[in-house]
Amino acid sequence: MAIAALLGILGLAYLLGSFPTGFLLVKGLKGIDIRDCGSGGTGATNVLRTVGKGPALVVFGVDLLKGSAAVWLARWAFPLLLARFGDASGGVLTADVQPWVDMLAGLLALLGHSRSVWLGFTGGKSVASGLGVLLAMAWPVALGALGVFGLTLALSRIVSLGSMLAALAAVALMVVTGQPLAYVLLSILGGSYVILRHRGNIQRLLAGTEPRLGQAAKGANPDLTASKEP
Image (cartoon, rainbow, N blue to C red; front, side):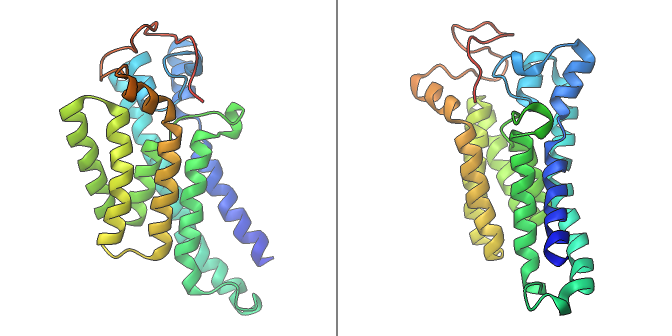
């Protein structure tokens, strides 16, 4: 029962992350599938390019809350689980496990956003959801990573570059601020996953064709690209 309950908590964390914010908002506003537009992603950046600033801010905010909510759920539910099943778990459930449960909940929220069960396991790049996870786990790290993103965006106007540098900064900040090992590991795994989701952007950065904020990709229709990113 204890393991089943724990798996239930983690399953809910995935479902929180999988809520298809961008898809639903663009579908409601324009009647189109955001996955057929721009980069094919469902996150705030593609919503910005497809619909505009207002909807993009809504998507960013909700996606951020999804990531935070997944970690908050784990932090609220695990102590209840511990009180109910801790003595009968044979030492499997202890207070020391809490950070690892938080970590798994955060990772599953990221996976849910990028591989949503509601969208045939497609989605976005998990940047906003990742920031939400960081805010719930270690807000100074989240603010530092956000600062790196903002500075990079101000200097380069390239969202993907800012996202990837922020993911790398989160790892360093987790270590510098002395966060638990589970949180450091989350930043490494989560950051690596976010960067992996940007592999198409990396290719365009190296080729000098990555669009800046407000631009469409070179040689591409601003509304539809010939090929969508994975």
